[in-house]
Image (cartoon, rainbow, N blue to C red; front, side, top):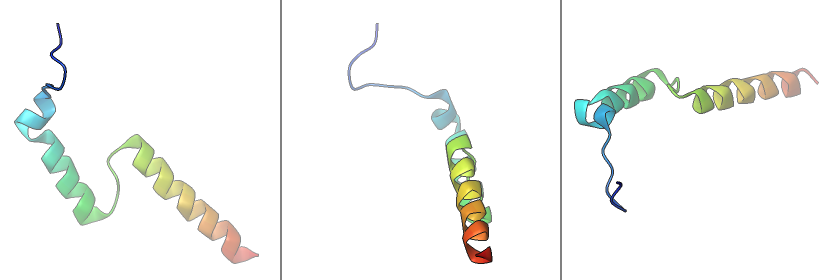
Length: 52
């Protein structure tokens, strides 16, 4: 049974999330699938629009 408003994440408790965030900030490359797709997509669009 879940308690509304209370959640627990093992990754956050172990510090995995913090490490991934710090790596992403230092390298400028997102660690999430959605963030990576967004970054690649914007680079492709910029490349296409510059050639015209």
